[in-house]
Image 1 (tube, rainbow, N blue to C red):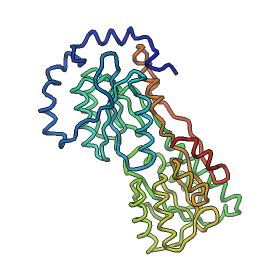
Image 2: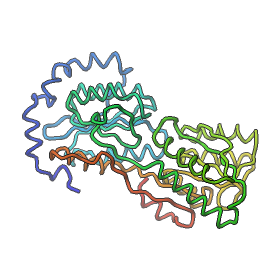
Image 3: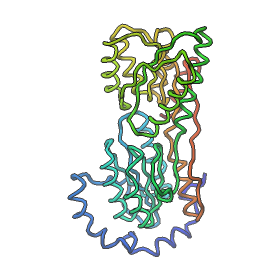
Image 4: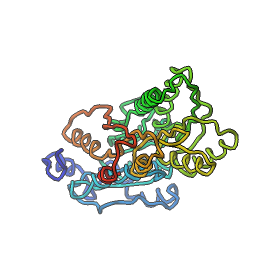
Length: 355
């Protein structure tokens, strides 16, 4: 990869020369001067956190993150921070939406007013983006969507998307479960599955749910006995699984849509006196493969952890480099992913991954 600090700066300098001395596009200069007043009434006193002071020659990249609800999310944010540094030729802006779409829309509008070069959006949900992305397009600011997808009528409203094939992740989990049950001689047994869903409407939730539902439909002996909302957090999953176990403990598999949910489910099972994992009665399937999830997998509490790679920063930088050079990046870019079982893991390997 060619880092921004080493790239030919002719194009960048040309862009700078078209700007006012403030570094903001002339078309939005007067609006930008009014930003403190405009933002005071709509930001709930939350200011954008800048990683560096404004400096000529830097490409400004503004990132709106879903939140910090999981270990995966924290790693995703850190990948952006470590990629878009001053040393690499960038000025980086970051805002945590705290899981609320309305916060993200407000943030995107403030980025547009500032006239940043690029907006990176990790959307809370898929719908409701047409208007604000139209505003970004009219301002000449390319939007790169990461992780979760968006559903818009006009796909030219965003330049590219970077993330995981979430349905394929679900299909990987189903294929593994099918093979695992066959190895145990349980192919014809009735398999009762408790499905712990993530944030409803999120692309990861939709894809992983479709993978499980299609797989269950293809196996006559499989049944999803309930679908509960874990919201990708350990606390919420612990709560809903504990409540479910008060009704019935007849469960063969718990399909959790991320590691934090898996840990919450394991906690609820343990308190109910139900064993799980490689030596237990309940098979635990998880997603993300963060360090905490893989540690639980290595110990045998989680049977399968399907990777969801959060290191999106380098791929986003490649897209920006293409756009800076006048190129057209691929509309969809998938990160490489795999899966893990306890026998595949060591403490050294988990420590080496960085997330």
